[in-house]
Amino acid sequence: MSKVDHSLQQREEITNYLQTLVQAHKRALLDDRDGGDLYQIRESISVCFDDLIQINDTLTSHNGILREEVERIKGARLEILDLSTKQIGLIRSREEWSTSDKMNKFRSDITPHSGNDGTVDNITIPLHYRGPMNKYIELVGASNTTLASQHDLQIGDLGKLDELTDERSPTDKSTMFSSLEYLQQAQLASDSDIKSLEATLESLKRDQSFIERELKRQIVLIQSRKDSISSDLEIVTATKRDLFQKLEIPMPSTEPSESVAKRLLNMVIKDESAEQQIHDVNDELSLAIEYIDMKVTALADQLKEFKDASSELLTQKELWAQCTHEVLSLEDDLKIKFSEHMGKPHSTELIINTIQSTIDNLEDIQKRCSTNVLSSLTGNEIATLKKACGILSEEVEGSMSSSVKTEEISPLGNFGDKNNNVRVALSTSQPEVSLQVDSLSSKTAHQTRSPVSPSLNEINRTAFRQKATRDKTD
Image (cartoon, rainbow, N blue to C red; front, side, top):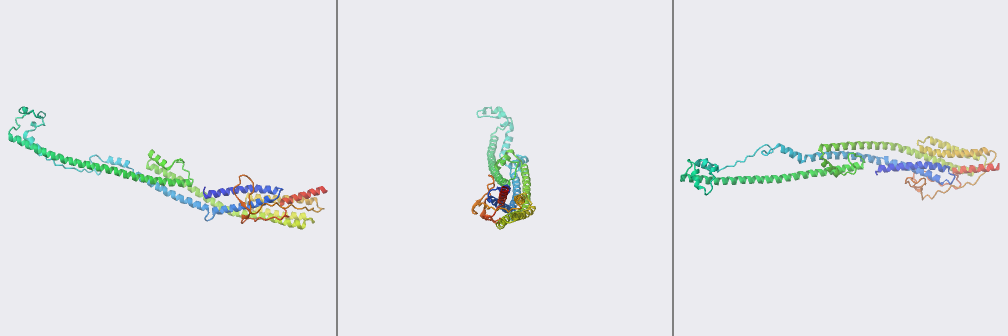
């Protein structure tokens, strides 16, 4: 969970807790039991306002987490743009290093008898045997050679020589030795020419072997370069995916459980073209940028909303402080009036007037309340005071000729040691907001009530007792 989400969650929990305190405040005002809970609730409400103000300051200050979040997202936006650009560049680079298309194009442009530039290297081989061989054929005649099938003689067939010899075939000794000399020269020359051709062929084979080795080496180098680009592409893609997850950017084109390696493998299996992959990256980028811009706009709106709420929260805190001050001042004032005027004529009217003055002040505060929470809290206090005035007014009307009988006022309940943690038990799902009386800075300070100081609940109870006593006397 991000800092912003955590603060927003705290803000929501405290706001909900404040709503429960409004109801608890109303119940405590109507409760006839000791008033310790009421003071705790009032202080808890003050703590809630302080906590909300603190959270708002944390969110909206110059170095607040909302501004930090906006800057973080804007930085991530630039990083995603940069990563997408690298991704597209790597896809194109990998395509440029792909050998299959280029080899097919290369093979289609050449023939076995042409170089890759269309030129032919001719090899000139001198043949020395043809000269003496041709002289021999001219000397004996082609028909008297093995070129004619009937002259394919074997040893032992020399007896047939007379039958097969052409009339023009030389039979004298010198001619036959000359023909033998030509044949020997041709044989020696052909052996030499064959050796020369074999050497040339061997050279061609060595060249062929070299070409094959270099071809394999270059293919390995190219594939290695391509694999390196694929590895870089995988790293860039994984980094971008991590950013998407951190920013909670939804990517419908990819299954959540599908890894980057699996997706890249699927690209190879599906034989997606580079252009298709680039198209997918651009689509993904458009969705991400749109989502980020919407999120930045939403955060900017929240920042403005919370900045406006900060002044409103300060006003609520001040108005609530005024409200509690009015009520606590009233209780102090009533303590004095009970001790000084109880039993004297018109003491009840004096108390009613004192309470009514506080009601007027609270109603003026309520008019300045701009939230339902504060208006309800102030209204609860006003309603309780009006109820007390109503009861006392009935007492005045019923005992115009008699004095008000004083009773010992029960002291307020002690609501705990200031050093102890105070938590109002309202529900089982209240937020984890620890309220400690001795740590309430900038709040309405806890005021220890005097044992003779009456709470408003006690005023109501006293009025009821006085009325009941008067009814029995009558």
